[in-house]
Length: 293
Image (cartoon, rainbow, N blue to C red):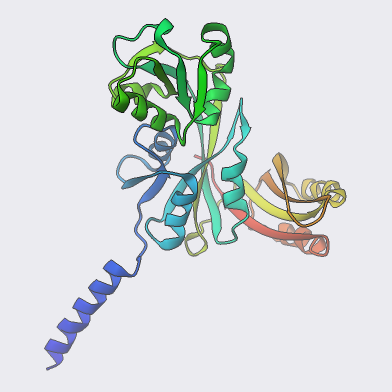
């Protein structure tokens, strides 16, 4: 009887793991295949993980919260296009998320089309808003009358061009997207600057938070007038400023949510002292503390 009961217990436990949204070690990213986000994910994790393409970044983050996968790789800033605010907001405004790493990926934008296309055929160009922003100077000089249409990712633009087979439509995407979707490269490296880099955060949920010594991110919600004092005290505590992104708090005029990125270890006691000092002026939380590969 005990053996039967144990067998039943093991079967029930297995079914619960399969159907209760148990967390796996897989990685969600903005798809489809051949996005820069997929490239960043592979660069960070290696090619041994299971990578799951999602249609949007919010869906990717929702997958982390539901336990569909453990990590999400999220683009947050580009040299040319600046902060990717809608993605940044999705991470910093949800206390369920923490950042456990980052990837800085050089971006090379490529114009691609159906094989047999010539440049004069192209009337419409598909890409992510960042892809369009990064290629704007080249487009102005070479295809000034082309209609620019934003899609969910650079690779999605390439996928649509390949699926439709219309020579009047091209895409701006990664060189790998041209290979993946069997498209002809019309122009290489059309980005505004050759130092074009996108920074990605590796995001997970709080139970899987890890800590490192090199980079710390704070989220602070409060009045702009109090920010200089906070930054000055962080500097005195030994933290050098990397960046500050301000977002509307959607509460009062003059109140913002700040993502404050610092060089330094987020586990130091002095950081807690600074955060305690400014608790009356800001809602403060540690978004991440990690090492940089």
